Length: 128
Image (cartoon, rainbow, N blue to C red; front, side):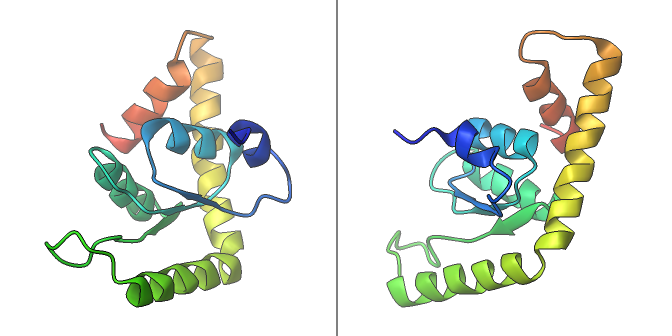
């Protein structure tokens, strides 16, 4: 298993390709790393939409139709486009996610430490 938090905390980590589950999203925001989200199940779709809406990443739809089959050519093209956009516009995504991270951390500092408060604060910010 890869040490996700450690990798995200490295200065040379420019983006995070993720299924965008709650834990991965929390860790990405805490580390200030923009996301490319490829949801597969449950709340991952909602969270991926929020990531794109907040301007901290890009949402890629794995399935393009109701058939639940991945068209590898289309999916590969979507990944390439998202990577290109994220790397070209990384400073914009980076600025936006750092602003969100700073806002959350400042709120936490004012309210004091509590168990799981970072996760709760993210939930408040994204309206879930």
